Length: 448
Image (cartoon, rainbow, N blue to C red):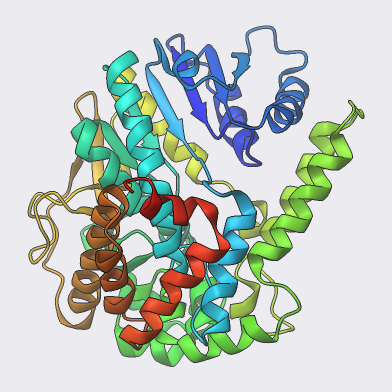
């Protein structure tokens, strides 16, 4: 099978390739096409992959190109992980909001709207080219904001676009592990949007064991989520929130912590990534070892603003892993008939009453040769439903604004987000992002 990886010069590409190397099935990916607009990054990541494949004669062949159609044509699967505007854009996403006293984060709040505005047109173009040159391909989307971008691409390709994220997977695995259970023998009740969901139940042998975890001080305190939200708040909710809900439940704390830091997350990663690619420029040996060192450093500092000075991430979380395994499981389920149970971003189709049928939600699914199908779930109620409805409305406004270049609609999206407290500020946000990020400004200039 042939896999196209868009954003193939990105730092996470070796994670997916590593998962492919571990797949020994006779019907597996044997050809990988990396696509990126930066030929230098492609060269660097290609060297990392070559070192990973050393000594494995049956490793998937890797080719690289800066031409989108060349990468896509004939592909069975397309993995999309692009970052429109680069990490420079991410730093602006964060700083424009922070300068106005708002949360500066790449997918949550105003930064996520800015990211979506400039990414949706690119994602739709990709979907159109897939439809033209690889109409039978399935697209696995990891491009952020993942739910919004998946929904935008589905406007062209329908259900053949599936969104993935490692965050809910990690939450479900941690919860099962703290109870001494194999995640493979548990059933998960998780519902929400990408970066906005709640673990409401964990079923084993016909019983919901999540209340056992909520009662266990030591087990709950050892989880990332127990440390982020505090035991009292998790028990008040009666669910375990996705880690990104920290930005909604502890907004002022998050803003204060981020503003007090010397660098935002984006600025840290920009500096780190520049160093990584510069260090390997010119063919220096040891590309794989350098990539692995930087990966561990990157993972160890994830969501650092939400932890105390003396709190460190669990070693299993530092090791990372997750979304690449999900991508492989989706491909195996569809191409080889190996059913899988996964939490994915898919069309709602009544799974979450209160949301449009074609809205993308993040829920447990069974995946087989026909693709993913959401499991029936108990209705979402109370404040989680209200929050999900409001954020989904903002996502859909953002998609429409990005495709039409409608400035008033973009302002409406900013103003209606629960983390933006004023229409006046919403207007200043749009002006600030247009001034700082050319790709955002281009969304509103292209139709003039």
